[in-house]
Image (cartoon, rainbow, N blue to C red):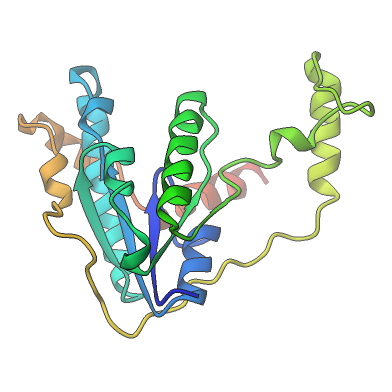
Length: 220
């Protein structure tokens, strides 16, 4: 197995329950977390989301630092950037799946580029309870009515063994794989109206867990 690994971040800014990050850290000496900032995904109507992304990256970078895993941010197109990785680079790439059609389509092109360049890669189950192809009628065809689909999906999920504890292993040293990486603050909107968000919105894995636990406690 290769010495170096890239954990490619998409929407999984978390340490816990992160199969791709866990696998990379458990099986490689050096790990870099890579986020690709594609400006074409963020038009003027998504300025507030830029602040959320900046804050998520800033918090996640701080958490990864505790594990000696560097978070590098590259600006550009995902396919263009990842296609530059070659066999000679001695790097394996890991990511968690996203199930939106346009993301799946680009993911197939990236997979084909890795195969062409002989780059080792592996992807893992994303932010869903069941893989969509696992929830079907007895004849293997997809459900067309929600109620029986939900009953089947719930039964299948509850019958699964307890979730695996995806442990992230601390590395020996912090390293960088890429040049021209940017900082999270470079993603912020040009106008600083977003500063008021800081008073009302805590963006981090730990803060999210606090909100969830508070909700569970109040419900009980």
